[in-house]
Image 1: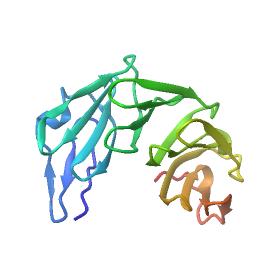
Image 2: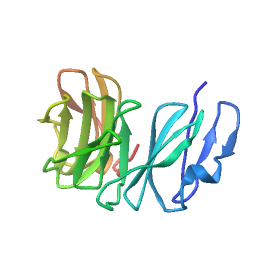
Image 3: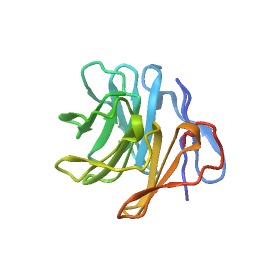
Image 4: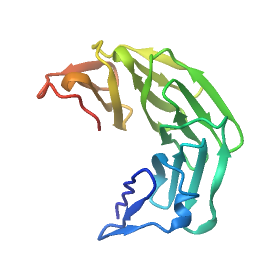
Length: 193
């Protein structure tokens, strides 16, 4: 039963496998514009807002629909949930690993962090400017060679041996568990996943 949570800057709708429904207003906090939304399961969803707040929404626990943590009043533009305990957020320049109590911040030198995707707490990838890709192993971030110098805008993985990054001018890169390679372009348009 797949669940999907598309959002606009101030509303979240939910697809429960058969129909689209707006989420209750308390899901959306105080109406502050939403930066991103992600989840570790259909009933464990997080979202970030432009006031630096990260909210965890657990369907069985309405009280959990509150700001878990506010970090430096930063504008989080994206997040990836690694587990029910840990999420990775980014503000465009730094990546933060947050567990609801504390955050650890890294500046990777990507120019601009465009997207982060986590398979687990110990397997996270980030993409950004000039073809930059970094991988986190739970302790440290390591640069990876993407095969392109074009900016990458998004990343997604189904496993540790199957990941895709997309970006400028139709750039698509595929990771096979060993190395990244550029896939022949099918468009010259900028791609976002």
